[in-house]
Amino acid sequence: MDKRKLIYFLPVLFLVLLWLFWPDSEEDKKLKSLKDQAKKAAMAANPQSGEYREFVDQNRKIFTEEGMYSYSQLIEMARTGRLSLVAELWRLRTKCAAPPAGSPAPAAPLEGATAMNIDECNIRIENFLREQYPKPENEKIVGLFRNYLRYEDAMRRLEVSDKMPLAERLELMKKKRREFFSEADAQLIFGYEEARSATQDALSEFYKNSANMPADQRVKKYYELRQKSLGDYNAAFNEQEPAYTRYETEVLLRSEEMQRKGSTAAETQAMREKYFGADGAKRMAQVDKEIREERARIDGYEAQAQKFIAENASLSEAEKNKKLAEMRLNMLGKEEADAYERRMQYENYLKQNHLK
Image 1 (cartoon, rainbow, N blue to C red):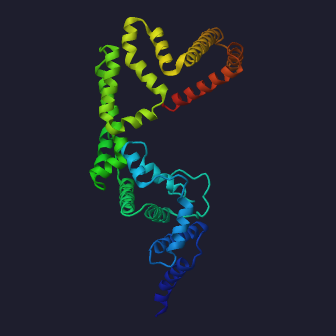
Image 2 (cartoon, rainbow, N blue to C red):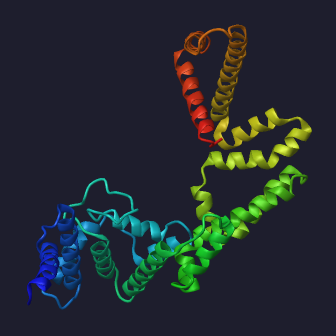
Image 3 (tube, rainbow, N blue to C red):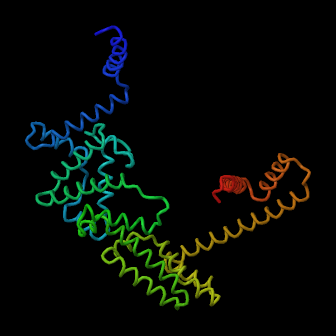
């Protein structure tokens, strides 16, 4: 090799050697270690592996809980909306010492858990499910798990415009799910969520079109429509619905008729007693009174503040703010004055950033 070629070759060789022997950063070493662990876990998951029994025992220590559901319980609860299989999966993932990006962080790793990446976590969960449930049910649930991972990966890579209307986005998601699951399996995993969305649309349409309906009939038709739309999920929805939400719904459905009759206060009181009992209704009435009194104090302060500003236009901004702070303290008290100031600061932030 002549000298001219050597001059060109040596820098290239130097860069190649530098790249080959440059020490890994701590983060690179950590990632490499996690990848190696995932490969070992995949090998240990093979029942023919000499490490299989130890691997199974490790997974039981990580994922087993007291009172876990049987397969039939799990499926029945998912079918009726009392349990989300997706939420159960994410809960299992939180038991991995280093859960996948986007999943809730565990309060603390369980005994037997080691730091792992998403691949190892999923390998261990699959093994746990296969060992936890008897054949052939275990293969059914592992199949659901595998298809969900494929769907999850596809959704991460799916590009959806922010401008796409919500209804179209939900329909696209529903269609995408059927690419990975049969209709029956999609209903089992996503049915409750999809039914709630469809029911909300139907109920919103009913609310808009039933304003002139007699209140008793309107309430009755509303809940009949909800039951029909939710189907097998209706009981679970009723069990999970807070009493206050149900109360607010009935107030909303009766509000037009109450306003026409001028009986808002009396009927509101009756509904509160219906849902919360006499003592609960009494406490709510007291809260209403306190809110009215607070609003009156704030209205009084704001009127005085406007008058003060109009009459003292020559004062500096710092002097005005000082006087207004004193006025708030005198008229509202320290706690209420501080809360008022925080609200004003927040509203000013929204306005300055064109968020309101």
